[in-house]
Image (cartoon, rainbow, N blue to C red; front, side, top):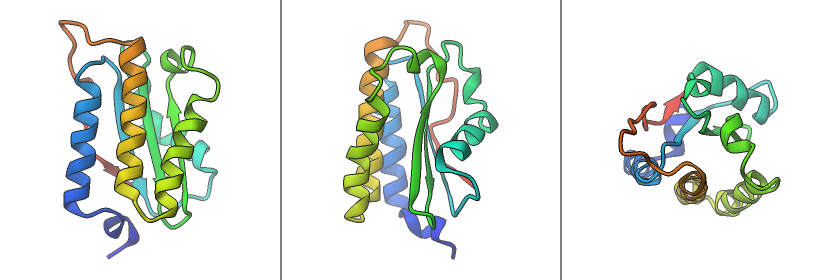
Length: 145
């Protein structure tokens, strides 16, 4: 079994998917988590590549957020689309990463992801409140590479 499968238990994965569902409940924004073993690129460059591969750049309001994790590399990145990036404070993603990294350093990967999702979701709710006709544009399931 690769480290990707060992990274989170099924119960932890369900908790992360539920955190995404709850974060998206009051926003038109979309949050995804992608986990893979390793990358030959920087975590941010790979996150941007995965962002486009998952078609997160096709949301109506350009308000998708991807949390990318390369397990073996001990690296992760958060990237948001233009709609959300134009509105959040310049240090927003860095401060979100710091919260997550503190949990990751202690081996609490699920908690780090859940807190990052919650923080991103709160910001999305602030700038992109849920409309009455909102539909979930992207799956909440964790993608794996």
